[in-house]
Amino acid sequence: MKIKHLALAIILGSSILTQAADAPKRVLVCTTTVGFRHSSIPYGEEALTALDASAPDFEIVTWLRQPEIEVPQGPKPPRKPARNAPQAELDKYTAALADHKETIAKWKVEGKSDSKKAEFDAAMIKTLEALSPQALRDNRIDAVIFCNTSGALPLPDLEGFANWVKSGGAFIGMHAGSDTLKDSLPFTDMLCGTFDGHGPQVPATLHAGDKEHPANGNIGDIWTLSQEEMYLIKKHDRDKVRSIWFMRHHPNKPEEKGFFPVAWVRGLGDGRVFYTTLGHREDIWSIDPALPKRINSIDTAAQFRSHLLGGIRWALGLAPGSAEPNPATN
Image: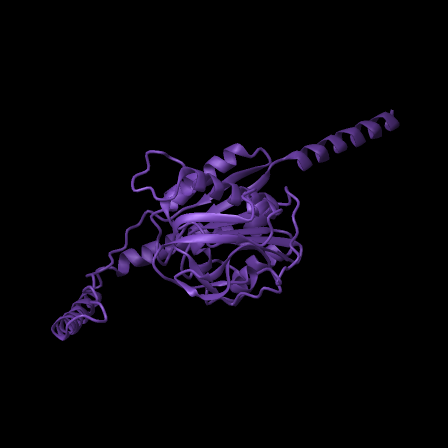
């Protein structure tokens, strides 16, 4: 009888392990901001929800969204004139700027935003508790996505978060993900790149660093965007990453040749990182044919989703692809 019980226990244990192995990977998505907030964030959430629905091997189990507390921003500054504006216009701006500084000083003394700001900060800290290493482990999170997050987000344990990735977690960032925590070394070292500004939106021709990688999105050697806000990246070490997409010249200065990273992956300890600078425009996220003021085609938006899906699945270990650095890519 004991042998039968032991055999049954082995069978049941094996069944449980098989079910666990087949369970979808668990993903957390964060779209909170304490810096610039992109109007495309709702479209990003919609696109990620659609990718979740299309992929049976992973599921978004947690959303960390912006606290619904509006903080008064105060009087807006005067519009800065062009550099070649007439002197009279420059003088007028200088006077208006001085008046604005006085107005802001009075507004701050009155404390009109203090209570709401404190309420917002407390709510943000509460929201981001889910990114503590212990919470990530307790909730069995396999990957964290930063979708157009920005600013110095108050993560409860930033170094612990980076170590969670190194210990086998996955981190995926989109567009302003590199404009997040950019003065925090554990985060910038993990991402291996930091936002360094951008020019006006432009058409862009992207070249594949690895056309076989899942994060290429089956797009091929060349990817042409009708318009996008192309980031410049600093603190980027090509000897630590595998380039997926890049430009061969400065986005806004075609005469300035060089290597300008657009998307990359890297191994980090036992973990994986995937980041793409793309994702500013609403029409690069949305496949809705009724989206107003569309410049990028629906096909381009579908390619972007394929790029994201491949990168997410790779980061989760669901799709094969190299993380070997390829600094010779040009």
